[in-house]
Length: 525
Image (cartoon, rainbow, N blue to C red):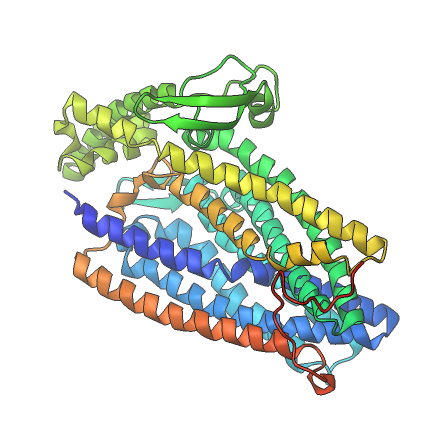
């Protein structure tokens, strides 16, 4: 039997460190390519202001990059600290992309970042530009490998369970690399990073314009941010739809939960714009639907079905019962590896073994489970519907807000009305929103696949280390204190660099942080 307190604390610790780490990742992804774009303009035009822009935004990128790498190291160590059985069970599969990601982050990325910062006066213009573009590419490739690892957890292709070693092993590494879930997650995640980086640059540019300082610098930065951000925001919506399409075949319960769809509708299914999921009555109250929309988006057809929660629970119950056959055969094989009958029985039912393991939350030997416990295990496959439903809608709503914001900024930049005050105020207070959307995206991805740490293969509660609650609480407190200090240090450094501006030696008066209602430095339009 598993100590669920240890499981819950381990999950909380990993969630806190992972979501904290992801505060830095999107900004790194977005700023890296914007630096490459700005330096490209510098090399093509030879205008000093574009070099200054690259160096200023590069300094902010550097602070964020260091914090991202340091927090990522801690997160990876937790696989051995808190999730040792998971690491043992899937190390042959999960370890390879994770190791490659480490090489990309700590060798390729670090080398190229060093060339970017210290190569300005030691390399030719084209040589330094090449290093900057490779740095941006390396940053994104680093994200690719970690998302390949995470995508495999969501859709464990290219691997099989070996009853002799009691571990998952790779049988087709190409299938792991080109996992459709991983590819969809990668393009969606990096696009979200581009939005984050663009809105950060836009907000700081608005700050400069509201202070009437570095006008030419800020206008150019704003123009690049709005164009890059608009492309990124449109990509997020389009590629997010592709991620949803990937759920149709691989994570049907997650899709049904985030839509709060309890029953299977006639094809094509409607999309619920807003409503109030009631998990007691198992229906969504006061729902406002768009006919056909969900079916068309999820299946790309007029006749494809999107299965509801209740039918999927019934399927899960059948898979639990079938998994018991695999579990019994596996126990017989452990006693007698040459039992051919057990081998044959295991091969027929092995795809449902993970469902039988869900019963170990309630009984030590799943074969002794009662019908009620089997039913409860099937219902465990349903994540919290209300959390999923509202997280998705807030995230999607923010996505459309970013499109409108960047489109407005792009139009204003094209018309050379960069100093339009209402837009600058809106941009100045919008930077937290991409992080909110990104964290909600990760909540949907990770919380939505519960109770699985590996979808359909290994329940989360079986992946923990042999720890007690006090040990986890002690390390969690330590991480919280350390990360709190790091957060304060980064914010102080970022604010200091921004308030100094790109030309501190020419600063005649200090930059101040304007507030709505105060005397605005900008003249009336």
